[in-house]
Image 1 (cartoon, rainbow, N blue to C red):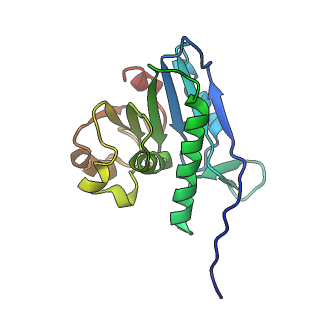
Image 2 (image 1 turned 180 degrees about the horizontal axis):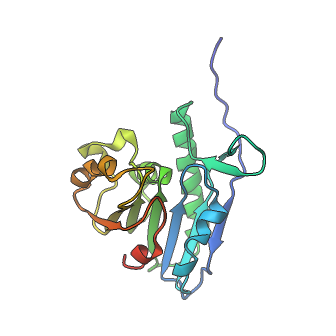
Length: 207
């Protein structure tokens, strides 16, 4: 038995919130977590839609049925199977999406990239591999890519104006599991809120 790989085209799905125009000051790329879909994830950011922000929510390419039935569907950025190609594919996907969104946006727009839960690993790998303008990274309630969990790895995406956010009652990813990143991500601002594994828009308003 021999293993082979073949490059194919995929149709990716993404959602946007707000309008990208001359009033836009910030573009946010928001990367969902495991078993979520982009549309429902993006609704979380509606309170931040003030007319000056434009939100882009890409959906992971791998979808599956939840809870053993056929009613609910979720998506995942990768699994342990053929992980190197999965990572390569989603980084290229996000690079292509970035260009498609910002190619005619003009100068002076602040770009913020947020990853939630599994999206933290996705965003950290993307930021480490990319040369795109990312003014702010927001790593939210998740772990950075395993291969980046060292000084050399985080140096590829670690810079000022970055944030690490987590809830004090997060049962999916407990604080004890995230605390080691505080030393590793030395120049990130660490913010906590009273809550669980969820997006707290009040915290994001402060960034």
